[in-house]
Length: 127
Image (cartoon, rainbow, N blue to C red; front, side, top):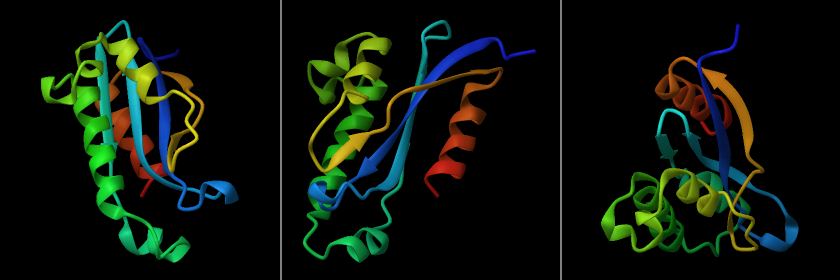
């Protein structure tokens, strides 16, 4: 029996050298339209990132991820995008990009506890 909430999630990735298409998972965003739920978790492991490239601008990566977090939470300091409804904020963050921060394609599932599901995905796919 599937959980009562249909959700979608995407993995947030840093590509130290975009042209090589190698990445490190740094976060997860999960949303459920029915539950009016969105959550964004991330962690930057600087030593792992620097193993790929010593030239990375960690402060830029941090500020971009902080912006994504504000947008996901609907924080007004996140700008116009942060004021959109939850599905639009998720779609904006999960949109295809060619920058050094990208996301996986969205994946779907069912859950009875969206917070636990977000944490489980974060533990399994990022940490």
